[in-house]
Image 1: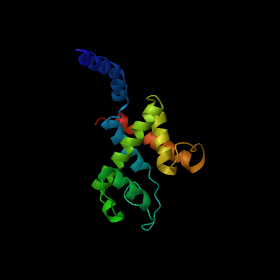
Image 2: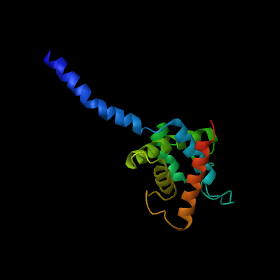
Image 3: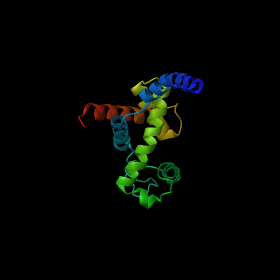
Image 4: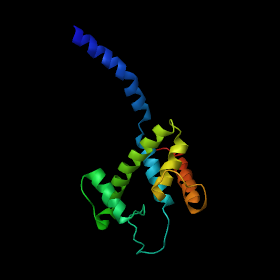
Length: 152
């Protein structure tokens, strides 16, 4: 009986935590909008040999780590050029980062998108308040909002 009562108390004690975590989890629609916004805002270098890969313009060192994290295997830049594979990896990383930032901003979606866009471009969550990075972040936010308004 004592064990059963302890289990009930622990379960009810965890319930608010689980509800909070569920509320913080990013939706598939949010991930899809962010992935598309990042793709559309990717800098166009107009150089086929710019050292960046896929429609998302990812550096080779970055894609190796991301593919290890998301696919449990390291991809080559050539493999990452395939849009379906790149989208899968980018979606995985975007979900991770957007989820973190939604939690950090207490579900402020625009602030989370801004922070993820800054991180995407610079590797830092802050510091994108002026110049090229600020313009990039604004583009991502605009594309994201546009995607969220469009019906799936």
